[in-house]
Amino acid sequence: MRRSHARNRVNSICNSNSNSRSTGGSRSTAKMDQIRFQSRSNTRSPNFFPQISKQSRMISPLVVALVPATFAILLFCYLFIFSTKGTEKYRIIIDGGSTGTRIHVFRYTVEGGIAVFDFKEDGLVSMRVSPGLSAYAGDPENAGLSVMRLLEFGKSNVPKRLWAATEIRLMATAGLRLLDIGVQEVILESCRRVLSVSGFKFHDKWASVITGSDEGVYAWVVVNYALGTLGGDPLQTTGIIELGGASAQVTFVSSEPMPPEFARTVRFGNSTYNLYSHSFLHFGQNIAFESMRESLISRELELASNSLHNGNGVHADPCSPKGYLHDRESWKMSPGSLPERNEFLSKLRASGNFSECRSLALMLLQMGKEKCSYNHCNLGSTFMPKLQGKFLATENFFHTSKFFELKPRAFLSGLVMAGERFCGEYWSKLKNEYRTVDEEDLLHYCFSSAYIVALLHDGLGFALDDERYISSFYLLSADSPSWLN
Ligand SMILES: Nc1nc2c(ncn2[C@@H]2O[C@H](COP(=O)(O)OP(=O)(O)OP(=O)(O)O)[C@@H](O)[C@H]2O)c(=O)[nH]1
Ligand SMILES: [Ca+2]
Image 1 (cartoon, protein in one colour):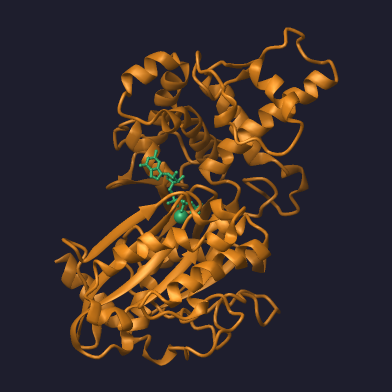
Image 2 (cartoon, rainbow, N blue to C red; image 1 turned 45 degrees about the vertical axis):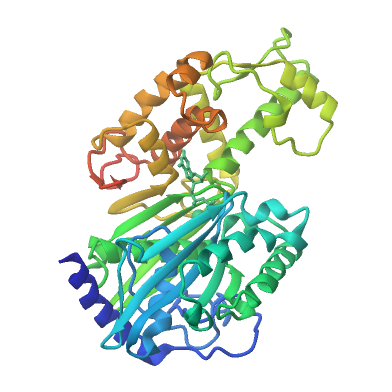
């Protein structure tokens, strides 16, 4: 049923695409080809989205399905519209995330001019390598080596006779966005060299860093296609909140007027969706964890320097369970006087306190709020219209809720209880209780529970007792929080 449903929708979506394929063309500065957006963004600049092809910006409604490499599907539906009928075909996307690089190999057939995906069995196979491309910032020329193993995996899953016809793309996200443009380009060039001799079909411009706003729009389109709400009433669509490693995306339909840099328009069939879409760089969970540690050091060093310090020389870290001993290796120290920092670390005591950790997380999320120049900023000084409707929380929200085995009801209030217990427990007991969990991962769960509650409830105003969810994601409703109304 679902499959034929998807097929019908693919039909209506992809056929409406037929008039909007862009030409491949030589390598342009445009960081992304093929997908075009109707980005009636109320902006004067003709090249508001330079990374998107310059031709008319029709957002071509694209077939999507809720799979890990969400925007891959969007891309491929658009690409194979002109595929001739025939046997199975393949498309490959490489998702260059901050915590890892993943290859997704899609197999599909073309029936009656449309693509039919099969996500069961080996219709979609994936592989991941860590660390992500941004870890090569110190050795960008060799970043492409990390893609080699992925390409071997790709070749082992595509018949050799089809390699030359199989298009491969690399789309990097927040990990690379955090690097200097020059370093980004060297890393991408290194990947392009490897991809261009891979045997797959590749153009240099098919390796790019996508904008956070695009990343959010892709996720929104995927989710609403999968929920069957794309093409219907905008007010019935579901917003997305994606918590990645380095960035967090928030994208939803809003009827409020908004500054052009936050506004996106998605056209799908006869429906037009006016979206708010923003990616909060540095708000991804892994980066936020490092920022929390940095804030501990700088705050305590400041206290120590202006002698307001409590004098007993012990500094508290509420986001690490009691008994955890901070070692220098695990702290990614930013430049600064290492001896002073090591001195600080030796006096840092894990105090394991969920509410203090939650307050510390909220302080990070609200940094810069005093500079808010809009009628309201939920996070930092960034504009965000009143949240409306339902939301889907993905990525780290899912991993954290899965770790705590949260019941699918009352997600946030359940997370508060789970976080309070976990943060308050002794480290030795936690290690014993979670023997199969890598200690580095285990250490993050006190912070991640506190960070998610600070982000979703204290920052964005979702009710703690929201009781709805969708399968392995969690559905939050912004309709309930009082202070947002
Ligand atoms: N606890 C836990 N976290 C996971 C697991 N797999 C991935 N993660 C984390 O979940 C997040 C995955 O979100 P992604 O969007 O894939 O992260 P990413 O693409 O590397 O990061 P961005 O570049 O910011 O998008 C990252 O913070 C990972 O560290 C898992 O099995 N357990
Ligand atoms: Ca990601």
